[in-house]
Amino acid sequence: MENINIDNLSLAEMEKLEAKIKARKNDARQRQETAYIELRHGFMSKLKDRVLKEAMEVEALVAFVRNETAGFLEVMKEYGQLKKEGQIGYKLVDGDFKLEVKANKVKKFDERADVAAERLIDFLLKWIKNKDQGTEDPMYQLAMTMISRNSQGDLDYKQISNLYKWEDKFNDPEYSDIMSLFKESHVEEGIAIHYYFWQKDEFQVWRKIEISFNRF
Image (spheres, rainbow, N blue to C red):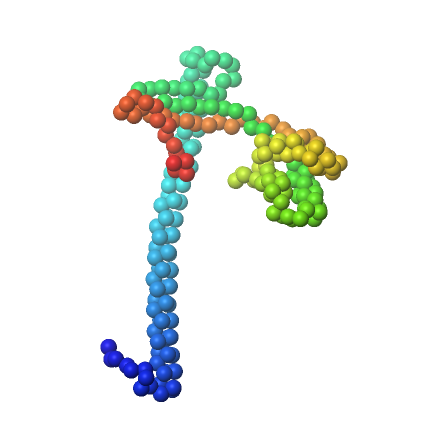
């Protein structure tokens, strides 16, 4: 590379050199950005393909487990292995593998809860106008969290139930009326069935098999 003594350069030559250096920096930055975008695309494509493939496998596994466990429940009925009429949950052990099927009532809300949730949001927005912290008020944020919906778009029964405890704190007829509407909209709808699997390790200790890696 040619050595340049900048002390011997004219102002025009200095400006030309600066422009050249700037162009090289921009070119290097562009190449770096392009390389990063290509790496990011490759990473996301590989991840997407694997995740979607495994998601389909998991969906198939869920359907398989549901069908097989429901089918074996009928076998247990036929052989008189159930403890009571209408039993859904059961536990089975075979060698180093254990299955447990648990069932519980699902508590949900009907369409009136949607109206109550909208009214609660309006109430909270009016309430925070008189608060110094506005939407940063912890009570406001906590209430908004409690009326957030799960992945199925349903309100959480336990979260909504926690709102009932705040009637005295708000001490407002509108809030109390909203809570009454939530209570009226509560219905018990169906039964949720959960499946748990265990396997004995080399020390003969039962280890739970976690299907979701997010739990590790």
